[in-house]
Image 1: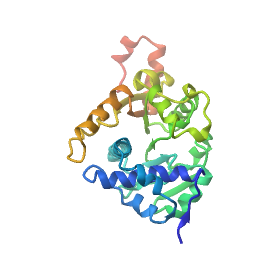
Image 2: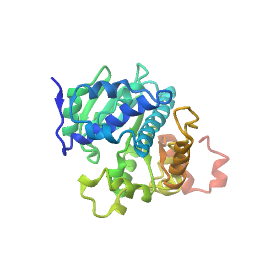
Image 3: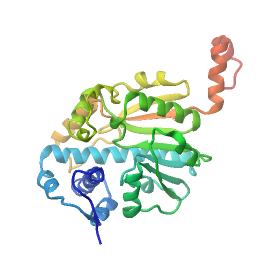
Image 4: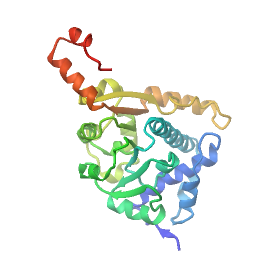
Length: 303
């Protein structure tokens, strides 16, 4: 029996990115693979006819490419962290029906999928937790979920299409608390500037009844804008359309590459990486603030 998804419900918001991932894998097979999305869609009772009618349009196809690149970029960053922290916690913030944690599984890491209770209820039916994996129902802004994460081997957190729904102060508070609680960890997520967020708000965020879009999280120059949030973080970013892949594949037209460049440069579509400083390094910074930095650097072993 298939799992029924009603129209105009919170559950329906899980179907849209799932469908996009399925289409991305079909249209751009050399760039992106996602067998899980197609498998889950086969288990869902939902009318995809409207989505199918628009799926062939140019901008929708480019949207599928955006989804593919974002997933690939996050996977690169996760796997990079796991090289040095093979037993780390891999934490999917606002997971929906995304299985990126599994795709990055090295056989040793621990995988956590976090989302609201109603979402986790659907996930438990369609994408139940596997080995070394746990689905956790929570509100990300209620940081009591920290206690459920075993970060003894390190922790890499990622969010895909999530923080557009958050107020700026919510993202800042979450990052600062995570940096304090998970030293040596890493957080990666997608962001864009105010212009792009306003465009997103016209479509994806209608159900949230947003009145002041400018209050929601947007970022143009991640390092400059986010570094002042905390002394415990270092920030970097790369364009998420062309920052990790040149898109020189036969499935990607010249027009799509132009749109990709415009997205990265004009809309500041980017993958933001925030590294949480180790405690030893934090101590060095603290002492540097209390003494003459020139004299101190010659004596310290801090790196």
